[in-house]
Image (tube, rainbow, N blue to C red):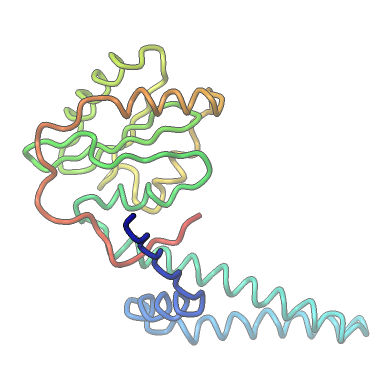
Length: 220
């Protein structure tokens, strides 16, 4: 029997935090000062209220935790925007964002590709099928993929989203996916996945150039 390859070690949380901070600082040099100012501002506000109410120790403890949570949340949002900005306009950027969806969402990148480097990605979830188009003019490719999916899974709701200028932005993409009304039970989602996964694969190759990588978008 062949020896089982060891699984790659998970990156420590503090290493991830350091890398995220370094990456974010490259596009937002004042991020450190902003986060320090936010932390101290929230903490000072709680200290002031605690002193007025003669509950200094209680408010100091509560304020420390609140300041830390607030700073962490805001930093995460800023880092997320920096990550989106770093891949905006790159081929396959929408797929990179969709792959961060959690909780019963299943993404298949590039189910549709054309010679003009338009792409269509598929997301399967409780709302049914969401086809996400990106590129210069993905409309025709979206229509083609809608017809192909309707033949395989008639009666299933198929939604469409276009990512790009004047349409849904990368920042709002996952939010747009989650807004669709849930119409399927979890068991029905499993069956839907099985059927669409059996669909013929693309004839055209995926356009040259790797999907955006190297900068992990924070999962939500």
